[in-house]
Length: 201
Ligand SMILES: C[S@@+](CC[C@H](N)C(=O)[O-])C[C@H]1O[C@@H](n2cnc3c(N)ncnc32)[C@H](O)[C@@H]1O
Image (cartoon, rainbow, N blue to C red):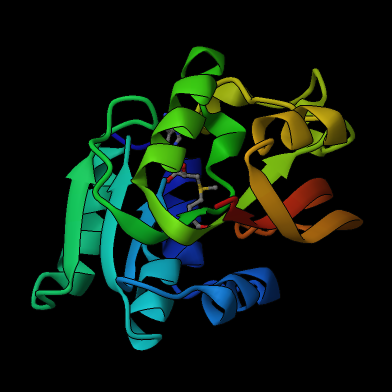
């Protein structure tokens, strides 16, 4: 059963804005046109990936999120959905892997496994697009109500991300620090690292 906060989050993020960095990742990807959306939530990025010509494999640990995506995309044979976590998902071969605002909640013990699987899944020239939570984000503060959302958060520094992407060539690196609002309308200090990277040959 979803918390009130999560129900609101999924309703309000269904048609969320597509980040320019995701558009950039799409523009530099080539190959099989299979994208994996990791932690797909209510599926805003799935819709964009389909319209960009991708077959989309998407997963989320929250079964209600996957049900929402199923309602939206059930009639689309280009979309396959699974309830799964970063470390346990069986990653098909892909030309683009997307993890948008979802690695914030990756269990610490699953992250290395996730990165290994990403590298095995990506075809030559495959592209990874991900956003990571920085130490000054509101969710990194002791006041963050982890139980209302998806539990503990995973905080990254620039050097930790660069180590994880050791076998990639970084094409775009954005450190975003700005006051704004969450999709549910709460004031929030965002501190994010947004990365587009191509797997090294
Ligand atoms: C902030 S939402 C982002 C959703 C979507 N990527 C978007 O940009 O709209 C974070 C999502 O990550 C999912 N998530 C949390 N922990 C996860 C895990 N261990 N494995 C896969 N997904 C997870 C949540 O269920 C949630 O749908």
